[in-house]
Every structure is written in C-alpha cells, then in structure tokens.
Image 1 (cartoon, rainbow, N blue to C red):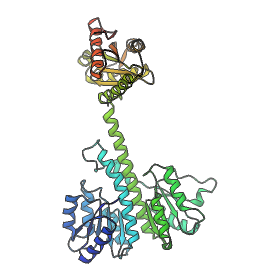
Image 2: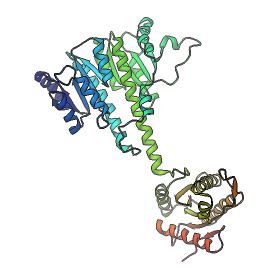
Image 3: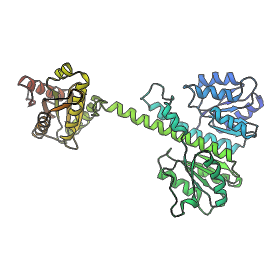
Image 4: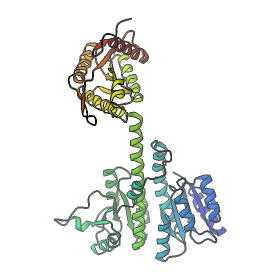
Length: 456
C-alpha cells in the first residue's frame, strides 16, 4: 500500500534525504522548496499526504497549513508538520493551524513510517467514502454540525498496569475536556462508565496484559474506524509496535510519552475516526436517497425496476410467479386544486402509510411517481395478488383522510390493475404494460375498483 507524498522543505539536502527514504519504501514523492510552490503543487497534484517543514523563509509552514485547511479542495489532505524545534508552543501553533500530526527533526525512520502507514490506511478508507458520497457536490466540505462533531471531547480508556503512569497520562487529557477512565478505575465497583469508547490507549512494554491481543480484540469488536487505538512502547519494543500497527492500532508512541504529544495523537486519531464516520453516514444517506422516495419513504422507481427484474428472473428460472398491483389515486388533482399542494402531499404520505400497513412483510411498496404506486408481490399468483390489492382498496376507501391544516376530512378512493408474470408477460415492459392496461380499465369502469390483466 503506497501513497503520493509531497515533501516541503527549503533545504535541498533535507528534500533529497527525505525523497530517498520514502522512495525506498515505494512512496511516490513530490518536492516543493517553499510555501507558494507547496500550495501550487497541492492544488495541481492532490497528494495523499503532505510532509511540511515549519521554518521556511517568506511563507512559513503554519501559513501554508492554514491556507490548505481553509480550502475545501485540500482540507481533507493530512498534513504532518516537520520541525527542529522542541518547544511546546511550536507544536501547539502547528495544531492550531490545522496540522494532523507532527514529527521532530532529526526524524526517526520508524516514527516516520508508522505515521505514513497509518495515514495511508486512513486515506484509503476516506477516499473511497468520499468517492461514493453522492449527497453533496463537494464531499470534502463539512457542515457546521459536522465540524463541531470533529472537535467534541472523547471517551478514552487507558490500559496501563502502572497506576501512577496511567494517572499521569490521564491528567492532561482530562484537563482538555476528555472523559478518561483508567483500567484500574474500570475495575472499581461503582465507577461511572465512560459510555461509547472513542480512543483506547494501550501500553505495550512491561505489562501484565498482552497489548497485541487486546489490540486485535478491540479491532474485531468494533467496526474499523469506530474506535481509535494508540499503543505506547519502549524503544526496545519497536518490532512489537510494528506488529501492533498490523493488528489494527492507529498510532504508536514511544515512551516516555510527552503530555502534549499524547494530546495531539488523541486529537488526530479522533478527528480521523469521526471524519470517516461522517463520510459513512453521508454514503448511507446517499444510498437511501438513490433508493427511497423522500416524500413518502417508499421505494422509488429505480429500486422498483431493479427488484422487479430480479423477481422475474427467478420466476423464469423455475420459481413461483411474481405479481404486481399498480395503483392510482382517483381524482387526486381535485385535492391539489381545492386544498393546495401541501394537502396533496399530506394525502400521499398517509396513503403510503396505509399501503405499508396492509401488505405482507415480503411485499415491496413503491412510488414510481406522482399519485401512482406499485406493489411487488413476490412468489404470488394472480388470485392472491387480487386479494391483496382488494385489501388495500378497502383500507383506502374505508376511512376518510384528515387534512389537519384545513380542518376537513376528505374521501379518497383508489383504482388498481393487477398482472402476473407468465406467458404473455415474459419481460418487465410487458408485465408493467399489462398492469397499466388493467388500471386504465378500472378507471373506465367507474374507479374505486380492482381489475386483472386480460389475456391477449
């Protein structure tokens, strides 16, 4: 798994060294020597990850980061700040500018590769979800509520055998508003549980638990992206830390863990997991929009046709026949003309509710459009379908529809045509046409009735 990395550094030797290191691990490397060039190349090439030096003449790394994070075209690209400065204020400034992570020079190759591997895995998931997100034109732009969600404090569990070390790690997290529970506290009777787990911090070295097994167990218990796992390790346990990354850890941090670094790691992991969750919700919502009629909540024409093709194929392959009942509300135009379109929408929604309540669990209720509705009755012969359609007709005609805003009750009836797959209805078009003909005949014969398709 590789990625395209943009390295931004004003020192040529630093750029060459970074390029050689990354290319040896099969990353594709782009190089920029200053802030303006970094902005230009990011817009043009859309790298997967940016390694950004802080101290550059003219436009420094903070300003580059702020501009990229403020632009919807590039705000989703992870930025790792590179600095030779170890002062806490410099790290805080980087985080405030929007950096996703930071590394100090001279860089440890293991730390660098651990960050890049984690970011590459994250990018793979996030990029796929952004590509599938059909709900907005710009899937990288977040709503105010979504941005607020990214910054919400986390529920954190610290699994560390040494109670003093666990408390030391917990203190700065609590100071910044995170809700933290140590492993020792979780075993105390009467302790208040933190709710849904967002971040787990697992100590690997010198523990009486198997951190790698815990890492694998947490990953199997939660869907990928639901919980972020950060593993702390002693430098002599690098190989074990690498294995933890393979088993599902999102990040590894060498001990002794700096408080500010831990805060940054938790924030980074939390933002990533929540961003992926936001994208998943968008994809689910987009899928729903593509299949469901938004006014009534019934399946739309696209879903109806796909399902009908599938059931007809089963019937033609030796299965039981599939029937359809095409419904049309009688004199629906009068509702809109007399009471307005909002009243018409109210009728359509209640009509849909009555349909749902009067069909079998396996029947599929659809709204192809307007005041037209269609029920797919799988594995159902013509007689059963006629009985089902009559049950719906009676449910519609048997009780008036209440128009709350107008304060009136209106009488609604429906006509329907029923057709069943078989000889003469061997294609989807033929089946739909037969049902439409039967529906038209029901209208001609006085409405508020059910008619079956007639043999040609």
